[in-house]
Length: 210
Image 1 (cartoon, rainbow, N blue to C red):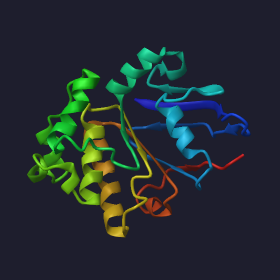
Image 2: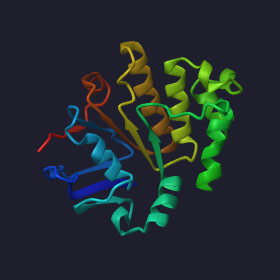
Image 3: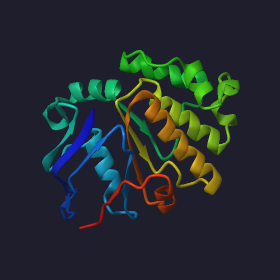
């Protein structure tokens, strides 16, 4: 399985068109997308998961060209094939840790790893019945990673996963992402401005504002 971009561009209303470099990435080689704030790296992440459509060019995951799918097909495709780790965990406060993970297969209609197995892999099994409001920042980020893995995706996209973490926790989070994506054979792409991550992932592209 591989993800590939070709001649990809996007323009926000009233803004110059951003042209992105072509790249191809597979499950054997995690990729960093580096860039300063405002460079367009989050826009690229949204293009890679089909949340927005390109002005030109295409994103292909496996044999599927995302822009050729309808909105309902894209929603289903994301639910089955893509796991996203957001910069902020966005956990549902009314649910405990286990229930937050169990929502993923419920909505994606795809059976992946059990919540208990995921939490055990990320050393969080003891927190499965805890309120997400009681989690530390590092624990909440690990739950966010577990949620992204819950549908056993083919592509994992992580948006600034280390931006608010100190060096020790940042290193652990990246190692978790690398190890867990390798365990399920998923493509891993990390979008970040954090140069520290290059210490663990040497494969990168840089996005620059037009």
